[in-house]
Length: 473
Image 1 (spheres, rainbow, N blue to C red):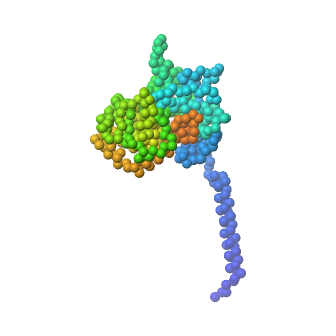
Image 2: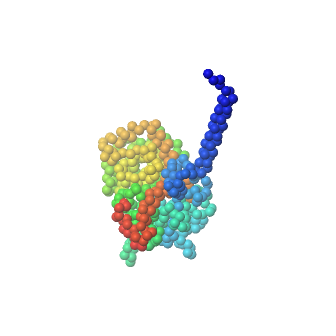
Image 3: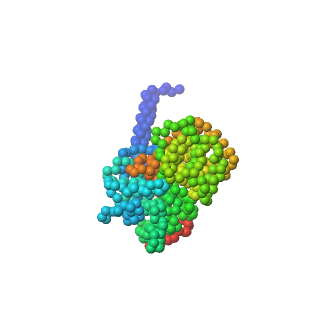
């Protein structure tokens, strides 16, 4: 048997150690190289989504409450997730409807001066047009001290969406009557003029309006124009008075009502501190889907610790409703003439657990919020069964109610309209909801442009409906 050479064994071990060390160095260098570039060199960048598309998609679809994009104390346009081009419509379409008079050639109020007030009372519940427009105007103000989610841009080619600042709700509420010798109301005339204006704009023609944002929060606003402008993105309170071909969840946004009840600040009134078990005050006899209110009234009016009665904003009605909700464990939210009402948002900011009886209701930000964490949903057919509703609510128990109450105190900020806007309030949440629509809107618009650049016109059949072709393509 041959004698083992110790020198040879040492040489082999030394060589293996050198090769092993070189391999480790190569691995470390390659990891640092990949980490510094963000992707291996051999990936074709043309196969990846654009950096702009990635940032919109990733930011807009993240759980916003856990992000840090908007922690700064001022509006940084580079941090905004949504860029909007806003038409400089004449004042008669927006602040002029609030009796504001422009100075000189100015189209917009001076944000550092007196800002026009929005009409009070029930008008306020559909005032989203006011808050969104003010926020967008202030997004370019260098003195703005609060963060922004959306920013106004002056070049429509840089915009994700086009914002149409028509105050359609106040137009309906204040100017729907025909005043002789006029043949039509100012509200109808403004809608006609708006359609003519939009359909003549190149920004509208290039997408057939699909990237345009229309504010129509009052259920009766835009009645004359909606059938023409239906490719646009509508911001609505619900779909109760809309044909599904005109408005639907795929393209449109549901925004919260501006609540009328007072927000319960520093709420420590827990389960045992709210003497009323179930609360409802409002119009009881309603048409269409609101017949259930009458049925529930006769079922519940004699129940112990249940307050179910008529109410309105007259005779200090809003303050009375606030007090009633602040002292109640559960608050009924029943379908009326339309599936939704501001009563739901009054209950949320009062931290009174909402009991929603409206089978066709659509809710704001439901792709972000799980309403079952702080609301109880009851089908209308079950609610009118003798004893069903009270039995269900009495079975909730103090522990579960308290968990829902605590969650209400966390989410109420999402339903507050303010100017100046603050992080995660209703204004910022609406912008985020719009941002989440942008990738799908861009896909549709790009598909519609397939033949446009070569002068063959726009063919829309086979997309998602037989939409009218706007001349000029």
